[in-house]
Amino acid sequence: MIDHRAQLLPAPGGLLDAGLLGRRPRAAVVGGGIAGLAAATGLAERGVEVTVFEREAHLGGRAGGWPERLPDGTAVTMSRGFHAFFRQYYNLRALLSRTDPGLDRLVPVPDYPLVDPHGRTDTFAGLPRTPPWNALAFALRSPTFRARDLLRLDGRQALPLATVSVPRVYEQLDHLDAASFLGAINFPAAARHLAFEVFSRSFFADPAELSAAELATMFHLYFLGSSEGLLFDVPAEPFPQALWDPLADYLAGRRVDIRCGTEVSGLTRDGGGFRLDGSRFDAVVLACDVPGLRRIVAAAPDLGTPAWRAAIDGLRTAPPFVVRRLWLDRPVAADRPAFLGTGGLRPLDNISVLDRYEGEARRWTRRTGGSVVEVHAYASDGAGLDKRLHELYPETAEARVLGEVTLTRQDCPLFPVGGFASRPPVVTPEPGLVLAGDTIRVDLPVALMERAATTGWTAANELLGGWGLAGHPLRSVPNRGRLPWLDRLAAAPTAVRPGSAR
Image 1: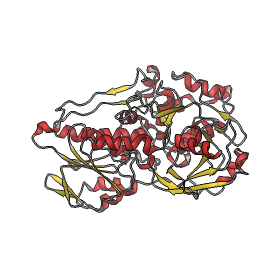
Image 2: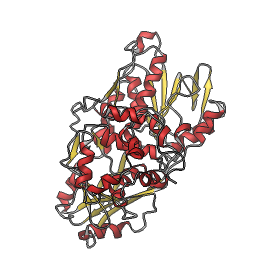
Image 3: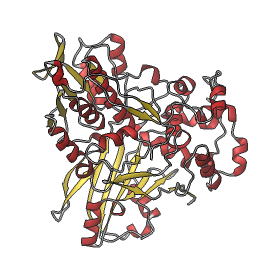
Image 4: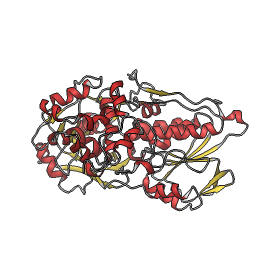
């Protein structure tokens, strides 16, 4: 399904193949995550010669996976944890459809309950698809959101939630943190853990450190801007097997040179092009994570303008997060969901039972009689994770751990208060040099993996247009509210002003 109100950005016109230019341009893509793979696909499909440089030994970036072995020698695939592929991730799904036209390698998750310290649970199953009835039904059936709470909401202050348009929403709310904004609109405290904080922690940040505009954009993307529904899909096998290995084969068929385990150390101007680690390219896509992007730009002092370089240097990462995966000798209870989100149960943010949806884990559990369970802690060192798991899933307390992998990472972008104005966009001051990734600005209501894919396609389109080649279409949820009269009201100066919620 594609929402009939989804916004279509038609493909820019031009030649369909670079072979018609007389000489095929050469492009380097630095970073083999979602953004880099989208950019490489967009360029290669128009006949551009593409080389992808990826620091890690695997593709997929933060949605990648790699081989591990359990103590008994069993080969397994590890990753950085659960990712939800929402149906409104149009541009990410367009990338995946290159090798899976029916998206058959994705399977639906029937629900993802959210639980608080008092055992109160919200769910997303069975909700209407159409805004605003989806959010209203969610609120009215929530055990933490009572009917009278609707009357207490400050409608004027909350107006930006129902009328999101990018970049306007950042002009309205980027001066506030998410926690202060929720307080300003009188959103009930008990419901914040479930209705908002779970989403804010998708950015691996505490709501007090996250821009309210970023939270409002997510609310629009998942609730009030889209009729795709609130449920999502997940890969039926580990990320490499389901997603990135097939895409790598697809790109290899278009003569893309993929160099995993290769960290870029130098980038300089070379006439009308660039020299990157000894090779010359006509154009470069920097689709790195924040630390990688800052390092490459810092090592290339002649690139860009002082203001642009300062914006890159000013990018920051969110606090560390922990992923802990356990292979247990017994199953968890049959009614445990594939994914459980938590609110107010620090340090735990969610629990995944991989054998509920992933083929590799399911085959292991059938052979051993066990289960594969994963816990996440965002903005935390993870101390106490196992204790929380045992409290929520008591049957795991007596289970013997047959294998375990614990990861701690700090490379996700932080979207702080007031950061949008200086966030670097796809286009840079250097002709032929573009940026992509989930930290890069694009004026569409997208987030997380979908922002990565959208900026990757956009970067490819920018370069293709410079060579007179045709680009690729993009889609997003509507870049406006669903109710025109509210949009007109929102166009007036917002009632939420700097300092008003502090």
